[in-house]
Length: 414
Image (cartoon, rainbow, N blue to C red; front, side, top):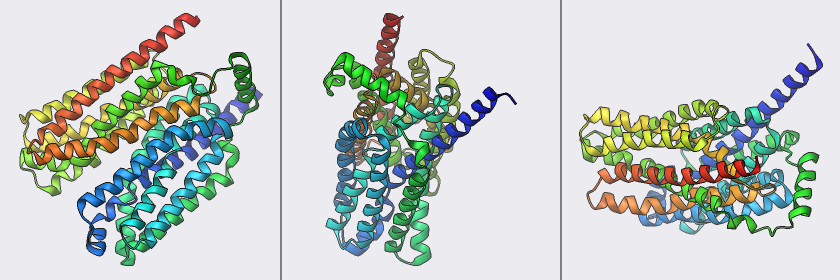
């Protein structure tokens, strides 16, 4: 084997190891999105809380995460992504312990705040490390794994919490298990810290050179229209996802008369189809220059399937299957979305851009649930699927403008 081949194999192994660690961290953040909701019935029983109070806990989480995510990007650009990632995992440990010790709403609210703080820096930290550590030819696959790991984190949380509660007869024991899980992930990140070091000498030199030459204000990136278009893209796509995650099951039950035992699988099916789409999308990223075209085609496919479900024309079980398969389109667009943001970000501002853009996720989550909940209360279950389709169409519009701006900038540079 030639020295070049040996070096290439070594680079590939390091890339895979880095991608795996960041995937684990991202999966952990999505796991802690659902730190409290699986135990809502227990909180109602033990603390006498109402659904409005429980909904407020979710809002607290996403408000803290959304504001923190926009600010965390500046911290990542200043001190590096690795220590910020450590701090995030420590917050997850603290949030789990707060939940285990909670004696009422105040204790649970503290747990929501700590978990939100932990979730806030994950996207700017993750993408900064991936963009600086992973070879360009494997970056599309890195974004694909990143998205899939998030879906797996969502899928694991209810099983983990309910399983431990059943095994030990106490939801407090389940939260102690969550603390152990977060501590184990933190220990692994510290142990393999060399693989997530984002302070390469070449990158530092390039960043210093850009700063010396341009002398731009740290907030200058906020003047870029592409940043806010990316934010709007995340907002609209998250509105669509939040509607499906929260209300697809009861909406299918009302529209098609399906039993809960059947409709409960629609979210699981949607997320599994989304994960499959992300795998395919990771290969398409490296083969396509105009990424917004992949995003538009994939999201249009998903929107068309959801509109078909909203029409009420399908047989009940077929509607459930079509709603689940719509997740493939959103997953297919995921890696292209993340690469498009990388191309739109100015040099030296990766963390700030990803932090600002990804706060659109939290904003969408915080605002969508009350709106679609009110529509369900008004007896309009079809709007869950129709509204999701409209939100996806608006997301496609935003992505198209971002792609056009990136394309024009590349032509100007050429």
